[in-house]
Structure formats: structure tokens, C-alpha cells
Length: 367
Image (tube, rainbow, N blue to C red; front, side, top):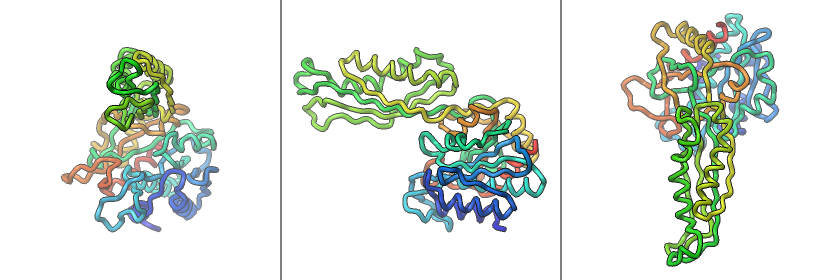
């Protein structure tokens, strides 16, 4: 039987993007089959669901996909796939869940295991898993996510919103176009687009309860090619993030209405594409208590620490829209070493996190 470190390094060296996790899926199937289990590949062709024990009431979830980033590390298990890297720790999540399966099998425990594809795309693979009925008969769901700001040996937890909803906003403004010497005869399209990008966050801060922390940040803006020509169109792309579930459900109408009003004030027409991405991950109080006890039983007193909210998105939130549950942050930082953030080519982990992750997930199911 391969060690968890060996499994993790194999996955790290052979990362696959969302919906293409064929090799990763095959490895998971191989490991679970070796335990005498009956894993089932999801109908989308990647991802695995597998029951351990009879009539499981708890779901444990990991994710499989990697990111379209180069691996900058000089390590033996560096990515062998050009431009693809496990820079978010999904190799750790997958390995820890395989470890949890081993512990549950050995101890006679019961759980449903979900190795989910395509977490890094929007919308993600959680929706495909839900369509496959992975929550049928399930009363609670648990997951862990790597945290490079937290030293190995710790699990970060909090009750309530843990991560934010994250939606994609694409705005296209149009006007007649014209000469920069005569802006009064046309629509100053670049100016209109700049005002939408700059003023939208302020407008939204008055349109919803400020405690909801509705955030819009644009990452791309484009308009025009010549310094003396007012373009006829321009575009901006960004994300909408919010912790509050009710505000998230209302966000599309609120945001698109505000964009149209701002564009109209400058005479521009607005075309808006608003794509719901993921709901917020909201940790249930009872489920958080279960995960707290699980982490402390796995790692001992002092293992669990308080953690802050993150505006990052995580499609585990789709599962928590249906059943109560909790996500914890698994410490992966090597004490005393430099900090390397998620989604960066230098990201790596202290592999001692694997045993704690596996034991915590298994204990959560036992609880």
C-alpha cells in the first residue's frame, strides 16, 4: 500500500485541469478498490463517489483539479505537465480523503466520499455531483482546504460564513464613437466605462446592508486603440463577492441595475452578462462543533484555532445550500519557512498535514 506522501507526490507531479482529471480519477478508483470498496465514477467522466460502510449519513468531500499555472518549485515531485500545477492544494485534499477512507475502513466507520471534479472552474463540479445524487440520505457534509498562512498541525475553524459567494460580471458598453476633440457630439465611452468601474462599488455599498460585505472588483478593462479616437465599445470583467446568502440571491438584480444606471448617466448602452459562480460557505454551528471535536481528537488539544473569513470562492458552498456542514482550514505552512500563497507557482505544503487531514475527516464521520 502506497504511503499518503507517495500518493500526494504522484498527484502533484501529474496535475490535470477541471473536467479532465482522468488520471487522477483512475488513481482514486484504484486506491479505493484496493480497500475492497466500490467507487463509482461520475457520469461526467471524472470525479468519484464511494460509500464506506452501510447507509452513510455524512459526506466527506475533496476536489481533484489543478490550476493553469506553471510549477516554479525545484522539487522531485514538480509538475510534469507544462503550465499546469496543483497550486491550490487539491492534491492534498484528495490524498487526505483517501487516508480517511483507509481509517474508516479499518475502524468500521461509515461515510460517503466525494472526490469532486472541476472546483476551479465557474460554475464548478459540485453541481454535477449534486445532479448525481451524492447528497441522497446525507445529513451533513465536511471538507478541509489547505491554508498556507496556518502552520502544520493546526485546523482553522469558525461558525458562520467562511468563504464568500463569487460570481462573474462582464460589462460591455456601446456608443456612437467619435473624435476626442468633439466629445460633446458623442458618448465618451472610455469615460463612461471608467465611471462604471470606479463608482459601482460605492453605489452598491448603499444598495445593500453594508454588513453583507458585497464586493465588486474588476480584473480586466479594455476600450479603444488610438489616443485621439473615442471608441464605440469597451468592456470590463470582474467578480462579485458577498458573505450573506440572502444578498447573494439578490445580487444579480442589484448589480445589473446599478451598472445600467451608471452607464445611462453617461449616455452609454450596457450589455451585462452575470454568471452565478458559487454560494458562500456558511459553517453550521453544530457541524463546526463536530469538526472541532474531530480535529482535536486527531491532533490533540490546541489543534483547532480561530480563522478569519475569506472573500475567496469555494463551490463546497453548493453542497451546504442543501445540507448543514462545515469546512475547516488545514494548516500546511512549514514553521519558520517563507509564506507561499495559494494560486502561486511556488505553493507547496508541509506533508505532515496529510495524516492530520485524514484523521480529522475520518473522525468527523465517526462523530
